[in-house]
Amino acid sequence: MINKQFISSIYNYCDRWCDRCSMTDSCRLFADEKEQQLTDEEQDIRNTAFWNRISENFSEAMIKLEEMSSEMGINLDDLPPAPPRIVPEIHKELINQATQYGIEVNKWLNELFDYFEESLKLNGENRQVLFDSVIDFCEVLRWYSMQIGVKISRASRRDEDEEESTYTYDQNGSAKVALLGLERSIVAFTEILKKIPQYEDPILVFLAKLAIIKQEVNHLFPGAASFKRPGFDV
Ligand code: SF4
Image (tube, rainbow, N blue to C red; front, side):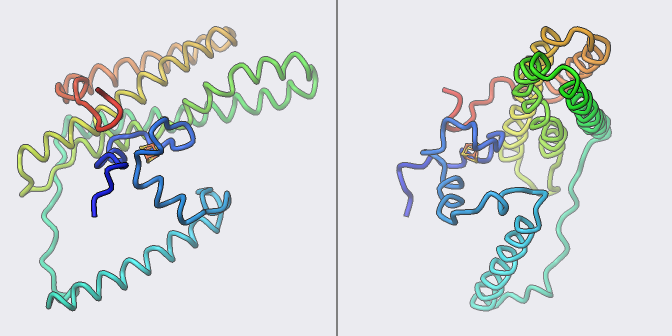
């Protein structure tokens, strides 16, 4: 049964930052995960409990899949190979650029946090105020750092037998999420630069990289910017 409270496929074109999402009441995925009442540990990707939960869910899903396949007379061990997924060369370059950006920005954030940790020991109160003023923007950078490349990658892949209309819609939706991550990261870096101008050199390099990636996303996915994400863009 379709629940009118939920917006269909809203979670396919969001940034998955549920803690900061204004549409949680309209999201089935959020409701399902809440129903499971996960602990903080089970939601923390660095915690063993997270991976135990994923493993349990996967096992349950496989049992259900085997039951359903058996009812339908399908042998899962005898399926034809999946059609190859095609990624054009020019897209691969962009995916590499975005992935590299993600790796570099995470490294830089780690160094920045090390710097703050050291200077907090020396000049606690003043440094704490400064740290508090940038931490939110650093979280934004961290959140989108790897997601940009992942979304560009998703937008670039196409199954050999996929229909043009389905492909184009999903491609534009995924590229739109990448664009949002790029724009929010540009804003975050601009705000951080105002607070810690001594980091101007690396920040300007990152801003240039983000601008180039954004330009290329708009070029390769011309329908992305105007894509209306279900629930978010009206
Ligand atoms: S739509 Fe919002 S609540 Fe649902 S998965 Fe995306 S970020 Fe989370």
